[in-house]
Length: 412
Image (tube, rainbow, N blue to C red; front, side, top):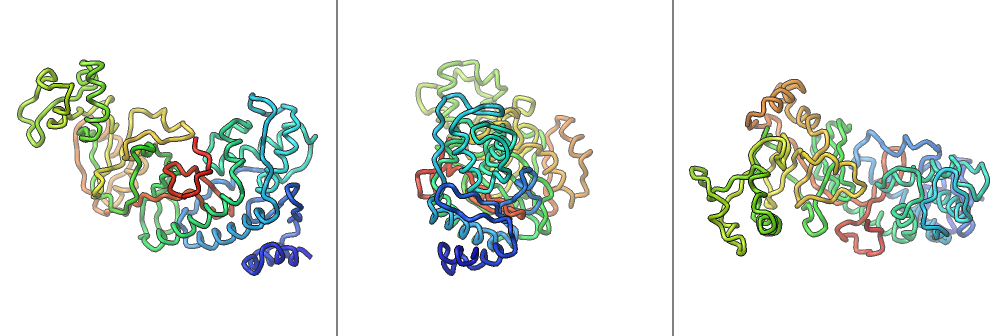
């Protein structure tokens, strides 16, 4: 009977899930918006451990998992999707709250596979609901506070049909990127603001990232990390001189001195210039080179990772570590800031015979040092807004640069 229902609403494209349904007695039938899906595909346990997998986003099995997810979400769309969450209060609901919208919330979370335990009173925001909301938040890159706040509501109210189209578009992206991978690579997933260091099919380390702003996006690229700069200078790009530095100097002439930024002519550091030699009411400053000294104020932090690309971007440390705690980490001018960058550097320089102690010692010295990577490592900046991990958990991220072409995704 389950198989007939799946074939009716999913057609022959749903065939792979027919067998999954027969083998998984925990799947409940959907009836409009009151569907309660307890599905082995999207992680049936209430725990959130399966949300984060140790397998790479671009693992060889990723395409098969994406195809299964597309079939499943098409079925959800065909049976009415999920209900809208319209809270009766402006205050975020959390553990212990009582509200009629909680009953609708339970339905919404059950349909997407986040809520599998049906205990408790239907209008009470109990521990089952809070855990399911936290799981939903983790799958969507939201702060996992377990509360029904506005960003969470926005993500929940993205229609199922939009999620289907998002999965379909990212199936193509993942297919293209998977064919370009070497056995050792660094993946920067821009919409997720996350980094994976992968070797021989296993994630060696994951890093939270800060990527480009909407008006200064991080580019899509593939290159190789070939050099590490320890305790680097930061040379201010012309675009930032024009858009940021000139306005700051107009407001506060002491800005350069406070930030330990020195002025030279491009290509010549023999003579240092005084800021008063520049007309800050024009673009004259773009004719000069502004270089920030190494140290705790340096915008690159303690280390910079170089790879050839036409966009003049790179990866680096940052003194603004508080940004890694933001839910939406889109603050840079195109370059990528890396949390716990020393772990990544140690992995990259393993072929040089370096260990973590040596990395820490060079940084601690405060001395400039450039190191060529003996084993240049592929780096890929990708735009992936939907994927399925090895445990079958479907992830979505905001289409921050509006490249999915759907326009209705929640943009925080």
